[in-house]
Each structure stands twice: as structure tokens, then as C-alpha cells.
Length: 151
Image 1 (cartoon, helix red, strand yellow):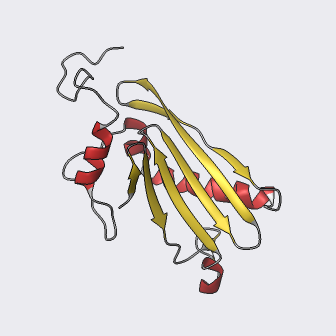
Image 2 (cartoon, helix red, strand yellow):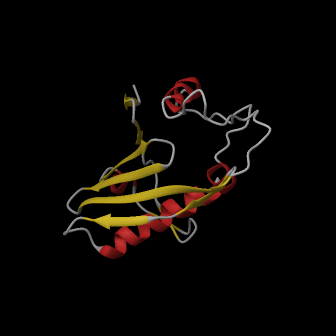
């Protein structure tokens, strides 16, 4: 199960290809096997990208999400790397994740997954995700149907 406990959702990422300069340079497939990546979602507002690279160690990129108004959020990226991990490689990983997240910017900033959801092969079960999210909200939390979403 992807849900490790009530507070943590873990998604194992499979890296099948790495390219640089907008696809101009493609790295060999064997290079991809040196990477192990996980997305660890600690509640609805903190996402951690945990990346291990053989011989280099671990890099962790935090993406805290701060609501600023109803359906509007501010995202930041904080990258940390182990002592053997070159800072420039950690920076490139953070920029790569930033660009990937930017592709779905409207979803991230508005924190809305409208129906019908765009499901792709290998995607996790949305019903399980919805049940997991319910853990973080009470019956008195403001819902989608609330007429007053002012702060």
C-alpha cells in the first residue's frame, strides 16, 4: 500500500529516462538505474522528494505549500544534500522537480483535483487518496460547498 500510516503517503518513482537541455542530450538507460526516488507526502501541505544516487548519497527536496487564500497556495523548494552529494547536482535535481511541478501549476496552486480526474497508467488509486486526505480534516472543516470561503 502507498499509505504507510495516517500521516504519510509514499510514492516510489521509476526513472526510465533522463535528458538534458530540453531533450537534446539523452543519458544512457544504465545511468537511470543509479537513481532511487520517492515522493513522500506528509499531509496535504508538505511534500518531500527523497532521491538517492549510487556513490553520491542522498538529496532531499522539500516542497512546503502555504495557503494564502481560498484555493490559492504559495509553493517553495528547499534542497538539502549529503556531504558527498555535489551541490550543483542537488540544484539541478531541485530545478528539474520545480519544472515538473510547474507543468501542473494550476493544480498545485489551487489544490483542486477536479472531476473527472486525469488518470494515467501507474497512477495511485484516487479513492484511497481521498480517504487518506479525510484524516486531516474534521466535520467542521470548510467544504467545497460552503457559501463562505472568506478568511
